[in-house]
Length: 426
Image (tube, rainbow, N blue to C red; front, side, top):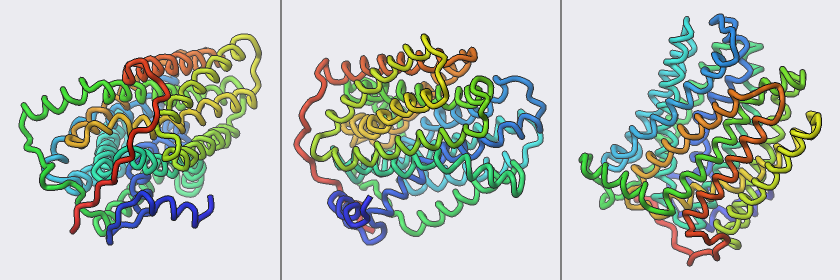
């Protein structure tokens, strides 16, 4: 991507603020969104070492090392929203990053499987706060296609983690052992916290602060779950993430036990992630012109078609690794076009309760997606059918959720372009 073109595009949508420029805003979003994904991807090459260290004997036990973090990540979303709407984004962000750093260090020192699972759960809880605050901050500052573009650009950087994460994790393991992976994660989070303490202003406006009252929290939850757009696109995100987590949970046994190509595992996953990141960049370039609905709905249709083709191929043929990688990359490319827009559209009507809405939507998205992905991964039978069929079912159910959100009308024209909300001046 041409640097001048990229800067021009960002300047068109970024509100002026002396503390944080447009590229810094995108990197901030990516860093906060990537907290849990970073722990997951860096840890993948260490699973075998951890299984040996904790005497794990089954695939299910290894899977819990991944699922524990995801469940903590999902459940943690419910913790941060109301306090973030009451006390501001910065205090809750720094609390979340502190929990994340402490849990990462605890994981590095864990001497039992139970202690590791507990540390992974708390690591997920800390990462959840970073994700909730990222969603709240971007909604504080942007609306409509502008928000969709910024989220997509953040996702573009965020999706570089699966490209580099496993390789970086492998290098760390070779140099210093698997426990050093968690120390590296803690150091990364510490650097992010220091940077944001210096550069990120408080983005919650005084008039939008809400008291922490049980009735208010119930009202915010009710508003989030009864708004057709919010609920429909939250469910669509959840099902899309279910397909993604299904791939994450299934990838290692597919490459190790089915293809017998363990060395290609991280390379192929990285190549898929490049396509997904490219899709996010394409979405950021086109969303102003075409609108988030047109792009997301077309991508969802493509996702379902490619998934159906993959089920057919996996059922009828002895699919080679290259065929699997190409078809799976196609679905992941569509996933990259969908997710940033789904997030923006789900948050669009929730500006007055952005923190609470981001918490509730994130909880449903991550916990639901993790459970769906775990169910897909648990059905691995040395063939590609469980993964491909699970991906197809997720795509069709996501389409049904979008139809619900849009009252049966797909490919709507873009709404009138709103102005971006400014940062709170400090």
